[in-house]
Length: 328
Image (cartoon, rainbow, N blue to C red; front, top):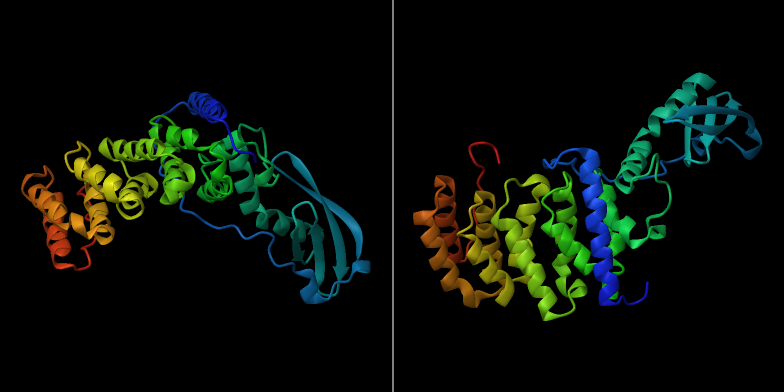
């Protein structure tokens, strides 16, 4: 992928904004969805036929099964160990006592793959499964997959985007995702962007761009109403532990006055990492956290700020993050 012009990068961000708006209209809600935990899909599974020494000459019959409106052809081998089926399209095999039992098992065991491919298809606006390699997608497709309800698909798309960081094409679009307040899957997408921004200079090539990224993360903390997918927590960690210095530290200190209790909690945690990397900020961080220990509107955060200020001042490991009474 060649180095992108600023015009191309901003055009991609505009395309993503339009695609996101269309997705929100289709979904009919802006309410944040928590999203599933990441579950790595290892595919294809270990083939069963070699364990029973099924040879090439044993695959003498044909069968098929249907799933999600598609028909999948299966090669069949009958042996003394049962009936084996191989679906080459899915790179999967199964064994059963009969053709029917084998096909049922083959269909059931392929369900995790189907779910993932269908989720990717929905994120891309396709009518069925997405089965192509991610590297074949255009840049907008990779960005749309960051919003996939299957978080591992989103993470894989982020990994592909990371390989093209030096092109400069994706940075404005990634900022768009951090600023998104509409898409129900925005927290999962934002988590992916924050993970990429752990190496911010790879994407933000100028000081101005880095400042824009820090501000987008700061605002994400400032008005956060939830911590779905732990995206808000992640923003505090990135600002404190990966940006820090003259960018992240001041940004997190300002968030201690934010209206969002979730953002303030993340900022308190992030400030611990600020001091790890920038010990010259220890005094101002301890002083500001001590003020929060007296003035934060949330009793649980007053206690947390007091403990964090103490731990930073003494150079100790910090206490666990608190949980609010409503479970957030």
